[in-house]
Amino acid sequence: MKTKSLKINAFLNSLRGILNLIFPLITFPYISRVLSVSGIGKYNFSNSIVSYFVLIAGLGINTYAVREGAKYRDNKSKLISFANEIFTINTCSALIAYVLLFICLCVFVKLHSYVYCILIYSLQIFFSVIGVEWFFTIYEDFTYITIRSMIFQVISIIMLFIFVRHSNDYLNYAAVTVFATVGSNSLNFIRVEKRYHLHLLLKFNWKKHISPILILFAANIANLIYVNSDITILGLMKSNYVVGIYSVSSRIYNIIKSVLSAMLLVTVPRLALLYGKGKIGKYKLLLSKLTNVLLMITIPSMVGLILLSKQVVLIIAGNHFLRSIVSLRILSIAYIFAILAWILCDCVLIPVKREKYLLYSTSLSALINVVLNISMIPFFSENAAAISTVIAEMVTFIVNYRYSKDLVKEIFVSTTLRKTLIDSLVGCIGIIVVCTIVNYFFHSVLVTTVLSVLFSIFVYGLILIARRNTYVLTFLNQIFYRIHK
Image (cartoon, rainbow, N blue to C red; front, side, top):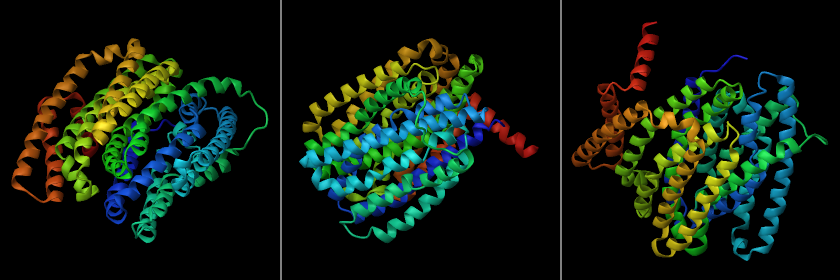
């Protein structure tokens, strides 16, 4: 099979991430003005509850399937057999998730007022199973995934403006969100079933899969607890209004993190393939390049969001959500730890089959996050949730590094990475100067934001060129070569 370009895949997945950024940039300013803060709080609380059952349905299957399936992608018969086994396990876990969800809806009185919104969100469980997204990731088919996402998000935006018009339309908003997120998964199933005849199996050796899947599942549970515990505990200890406020800063944080991680996600199957075939030198070279480039992008993004947090909140959510600014600035600090922890998790611990150590790090982080949330939220509300997230991301990075040190130490202590960090920090001084000047001369929120972003990118790039940054110069040389060619 022809090896697909990582640059093209990274571009396509980044485009997909940008589309995921544009969707809420278009919809959330509208939603925050149509729906009440309380309605947005109900919407996000329901989503946080269902996310636990989506996780049960997913187990650790997506991560496991990409890692193991990447080894079979050049052998169609073995991959089809593997895919049918994974699909069968996933179907069984989804049925278990639905049973547990309905039991919780019957038992917990607190959830009764959210039941319709929760049921709408529960459709994600079914569609996530038939979507078999991992199959396309194995084949690095990001062209199809990106085009599909574009089409369904455009349709979803149209549906949003048609069906969400009043303050009590949060159920319609939930339905549109589900459609945008997993509506296209039915097309995935049709595409895969037609080519590879995907179906359920009555008998197979499920034991060989279940142990690593359950370890990854436990790690995913711990990860979800520390990602979602802030929203859940805010909903239980505070009001829907506070949940709505924090939801804005949390959403902005997660959207930008998804865009930053686009390059990482497309590299995972390639890294798993290289390590699985014993090409350790090429594996480390690609990992080093990925780490340097992501840091070079993440650090200025973090600084820029801290400086422009007020403008971003005003553009996306409006005046009613200005209280989100402080928690957004706190969350921005977590980017550096989150991306590094993510690199060590998805690109090192999982490909080299050290998922049990991933379970250690996520469990510890989840415990710390929950304890901090319960302790501080009564006093500091949404800001406490943001602080606990930063600390949890930092702990995850530290523990992941400890258990992958033998593979990544030479990368993390290299002069190349040290130079990248210095280049980025010097470039960030330029960003601070740019944002300060633009804010002094302009007062329009939109104009200030656009000019600050454009000039910051330009100045940051110039500084990296002036400092002879290897990755920027290589990128420019490739562009000039193609233009000349």
